[in-house]
Length: 541
Image (cartoon, rainbow, N blue to C red; front, side, top):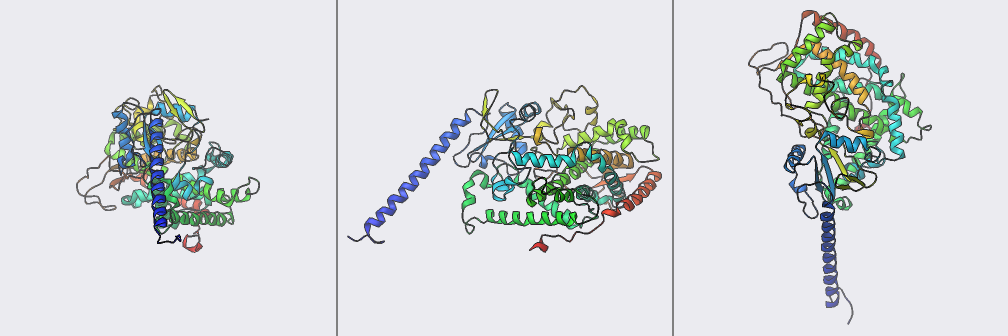
């Protein structure tokens, strides 16, 4: 009998093939699940995972760091394990445990695990220092970044940091309603001057608006279990007409690389010095690609924008809710600096309470709730009774770490004085982990701390800061004081307060005059950085 598409033999063949494929898939799922359950015995406790999806369906859709802390308390263990599909993810909810793994054992726990959405689909895992595994390419980029951001070099940036701080004070004086926007402009301008030699002059600046939107998207991608592709990596192989997200992300990633490189070339062609210009000039010497350069300069604004602006935003909320902290800061500033001039660099070492206010803002509501991207061991490692395989995801839950009552008594209160006790036990000298751990700690830490230290001191010196009023307008305060919510924060991994009203009143007329005079002189000095970029995503299409 002829073998045709309609013949019984062909139909039977197709049915047998379908059964074989189905049975093979079921066998693979069972084998994978048995392997998960075996591996689960050697890992910290956590919710029981389901086949294929792991714990994804059990994860909170918003602010999972709260859930991770609750699970840690439920299992009475600083370490918990959640499964993103077939991949185990360990969450450290204790400062000492996280310090032991990612700081003391940093020679092991300094790599990155597999990221599908932000890594493989966009290509970031092959070129961006933040996602690169612990290899020679990562070491090269880290060394180059360190050459521009180490503790000695950043002292050379004090001039423009101080001047932008002066402009910020006057911006708040003139337009206190939009203080959060002023913080964003200020933060972006600092890293833009460093990276491209140009200021961000207003909230309407294209780069600023683009960076804010980009960071919202990026920090959403960082949250464990947010995308099904992380749980089921095979989804990235589907045709775009079935599942278009991978191709959309890849296309946007390609456009983004062209955008950063175009900004770098524009900056390199301008007079004066900037990080982009230095990298372009050293491109051959350091064996850097244009993608390497673009990613490194992009990381400046990616890391610097939220760290600075969100910390200042949280600081204002903390001062409004706990006014005694501002009163104590005013007493210290009046004693050390007086009211005739603003604090300057030489004053900072004599302002321990003001510096404690900054540290408390970084602890009270840490910007990176999960400590950024996960660490991963480069080889199998044993910790206590647990076996961590190479490549496993390990996060430090800063929300839990910084609200641990053992390390931070009365953790929900904004209490800067806790940092005045030099003998207070904590695994780091800074007293917090806002900048991460070990060799993966934030490259821009010294730059951020330097700028924030002066800006916070000046903000405290200049203003009485209070909750807003229900009928508030610039220079026309009236109405009843608004009750602020200490827990009203965004649900991005880089978190910040939801919009709220606050009042900024100059402490004296003399201080107000000094703020305006200082800002006027600062604007003249910053004039060299005032140019408008011609680069946009649209211009490159």
